[in-house]
Length: 491
Image 1 (cartoon, one colour):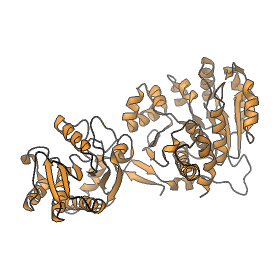
Image 2 (cartoon, one colour):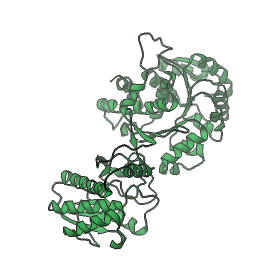
Image 3 (tube, helix red, strand yellow):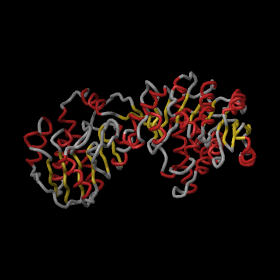
Image 4 (cartoon, rainbow, N blue to C red):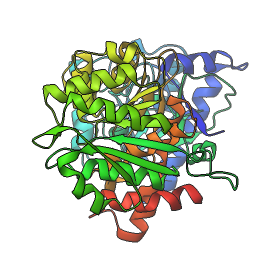
């Protein structure tokens, strides 16, 4: 399989409900797994503080504290709430912690390691004021924090952080990863995530996390192929001062396996592209002051006749003429289209142009672009990435790829896919143009829109790792990623 499940809180509850034995067994195993991780990772830590809530996550924490005391560590528990509010399995383990001498304290004092067991997968919204103060105290301790199941303050189902949240160095979760471990901003609070087996089996999830194995689904060139059957891509973009974007898109499409790429560019800038793009054919289009006009549509539509997919928007420019051109092309092109950059700007307020299309369409916005499309601030998109990408897909009736360290791909009526392959070197100008070219190449090979988008994000992530081996991350540029695409897809 090319993906693994990412569970929501509700999906985890369903998995736990299917367990045949006593739920106390699950809590016992969970707490022991965390204690083992703490002892193994921090063998010299002598004093430890476990911060517990009154719910099931706190119950896990009581087991952790008991096991640490049994391992001859000095361990205290800070219980956030009254002991009388602790019920069920958690109450059983609170009594067991008392039995082995675990002290409950108001002020934990200095510690070598802090264990966060305030809130688990059931948490949503904002922490109460007393919980916010507890989270702040843990973060301010300036020692390693090990989170039980999920950093407190992170929504397991979405990755949303509504207010304060623990910044863990390590998170020990159970049975499977949760959405909040991988989707930002939650992913930036989780640290290293360890998945512990506590005896649960099965379970279903709607959200998936793609692995490098998804690249095995990308059609490769065959001996019987020619340049057109291997994948033909048309790139439409470029304007004065923005010739690099369509150039990177064109070169990326070729390095991603397209057999032939043609670029429709402003006629007044054609000489620039002729010199820069040796393997790409160019089609000069009517322009005004270096920006294509609505009159370029006829040239583009003619060039698209032999294309398997079209990349629309890189460096296109932002004028009313380009807006009219984008609308006309989306109406007339009966080919798969990936819409990026300035074409996304042109779409603002006109998502019906995409919704009305029959052919596959992939939008590739960053947070600001998606915010404009769905009428929300970019800050809201960054804080609610999963909801935002699904809203974009539903509103546009198309596949939406939301770029970021956790790239998200959503399609109407399907569960989202998360792609977190790659490194910080991708945070460089032009990497989005590269991604657009790869999506177009995969669409031209006949892949479905959501699969092409997810595979393209994975390809760029793996290519960034290859590029880092050659050039390092610190000064990685988009061309390094382009050059690494073929090795990434070949290995």
